[in-house]
Image (cartoon, rainbow, N blue to C red; front, top):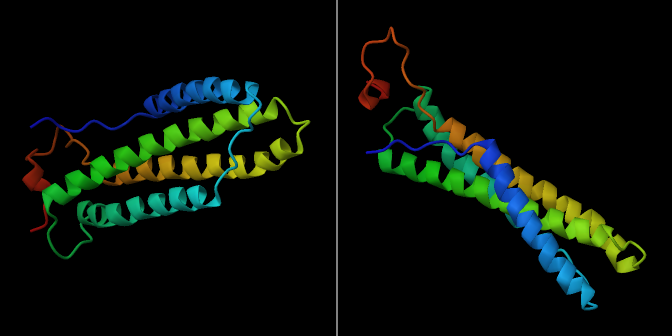
Length: 164
């Protein structure tokens, strides 16, 4: 079985950049036709932050187990699922940050419209919420990481990391 690799920050930055470029192109075309950038949703920000909290909450038992603080055992399939969820959260947060940042770029090009000025703060809050989700995914992913054993240590099997 192949080991999971961590999602790197460069990958998340690339996802945010690509999504941002696509968003700028799309919203620029939309506003050229006389429409406004859609009004930002408060619910979207709440959901992004809530998803980040859920990811951290689900990763905590894995972290406690790996640190030797858990009293019971941990199902390896559950741990693997948490890692995949953490990676998905990091990618989703990066994509959402790029998406909302692209809206800020387009809105900022025409601040003569009162509606656009009113969208800047909510869109900025959505960027922060999206970055919080990405950050929660990165943290949860690191919580689930098993560091490779040092060269001087004896057993390098995953069973060596389990509780007695």
